[in-house]
Image 1: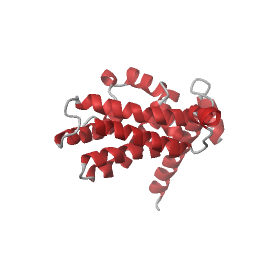
Image 2 (image 1 turned 180 degrees about the vertical axis):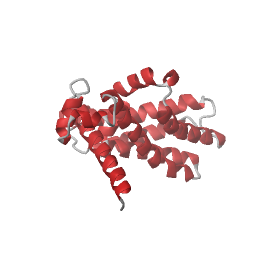
Image 3 (image 1 turned 135 degrees about the horizontal axis):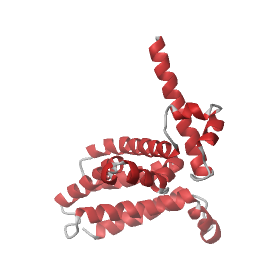
Length: 212
């Protein structure tokens, strides 16, 4: 590896360290309580170093937002090869749940924190949400493919897509926020959160089947 390649790798590694430290602090301490100085302390660099990569913490949280959506889209993309659109829809739902289980910190930044969306409103043309729209388009195309073979005939495709997304998001948000665990311990006497969510997802899929 030459000098130029080593410099590029060093910059990329440092960028990843900045994002990882920021994500940890945003989730554990909260966005408002996190400062560039605290992020710098976490990685044992000066705040000046961080400013070489990001102009402020809003820029950092939006970079995390983008990275998370890229990861989710990469998970979704192979599923678009599933020929049966209804089976593809179920696979997308399971994939979304798995993403929340395995990356709860990214999920919180992407779908539960308001701050990345504020960044969009201020810095992006007409508040465009390109990374979110690319992921949603995969779901929407799958709904339209379902309609082409007889599902959801009396419903608007966007309406079905939003309903499917919001229903599964509700399960994920309960998991990520810790509310599901607390409810299960207090009322359900159940400690397997993933099983509980998988069962709820199957009930939702059965509901979708009834709307065919």
